Length: 488
Image (cartoon, rainbow, N blue to C red; front, side):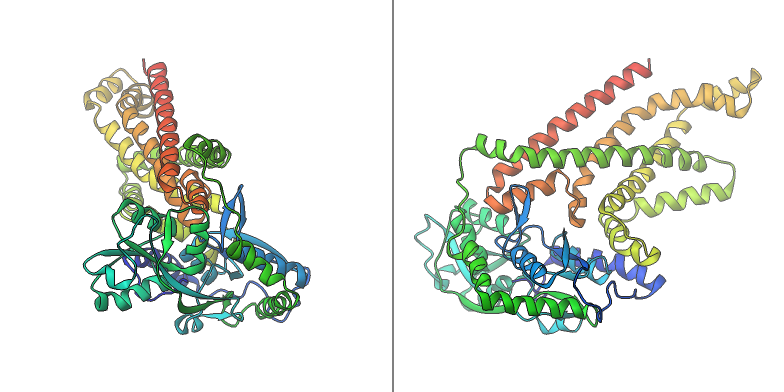
């Protein structure tokens, strides 16, 4: 269960960044109108629904397809009520930010119905009653209950009901709670011995154990809250009513229970296999992620080079206005977090323009403007590092300022800039991994989708790391070859 009680530093940071981006745009344009008219019939309509990226068994990817309890319920209701859905896998905090920015019409993401959230969102009737359990490593015979946790460390998911419950009894049983962002990484922490137990939603634990996550439950389920489908308050009332009607129909005809049994009572078990099998099965999804990573990096860096050259020349201009514009650009994009701009462009910009900003557009804007600021400084430094006597000599031979720069100064400066530009290209490629926060399906995002379903975190991340290493080494070799070829 996900709620806003006792958020940890990571959860607060993500929500702060998303909130700051949306809040800044809201100051400029005010609150947007509803994306869908509540009074209209839902039949034939297409709604954009935001969800989490990794919250098995409610939403996760299997064979590249987004599946889970939430997804099956949503699609069954949509079919029954005659509307269509476009699902955007964003991450929990990002999905709520998208809902507030009217980037999506609703959110279904294992979201707990709380009094605080009711002030902001309208919820459907509960579609799942959850609870909390504690689990330990399968071979752990020492921890049999809460009383065995004295002086030890446990883990719980940031912003979850499990975290809230663990902290509520931490003093009573004298243990420490460490919060992490994903269930899969929590389980790895317990297996690695950095924590002795995990507190998590019981269906998530049950599914993970069925998939061979190496844990076992040692306590009974503690009753928790209810999950609900959410829309912005006072908006999309027809969609909310249709969800409630469809949910009631699913419960009446037995399909609802069949969906729950599919993932909880008798979940399909993924045979672990060996490392090679994991690599082979993961290869298609990871190659898709690598393609997206290289694509967004190439496009962004080409734009960054153009911006960097422009603002780099502005910075050495004799015109105070041009220098001021360049300095402002560099200071803004070097002095603010890249992740802030990802949220700003994807969630905030639509409020300013009224346009539907795609995740590719937001990603390219984020990377290109950030890298462009650094490239501008590289260009400025490269040009200023050329001996001023070179320019003077060229001018004394009768060349104008423009020709002197083009024929004499810039070729020398570019040779000195090339290593720094190659380094910036590599940094941009690695920075693209931050775009997973807005649901961009790059390499690390695909890795998360894989280990969220099979709970083989270390092995999956090792494969992702090897792919990153190979890609960066190949890119470096290519860039160095081009440097030697054109800078003889």
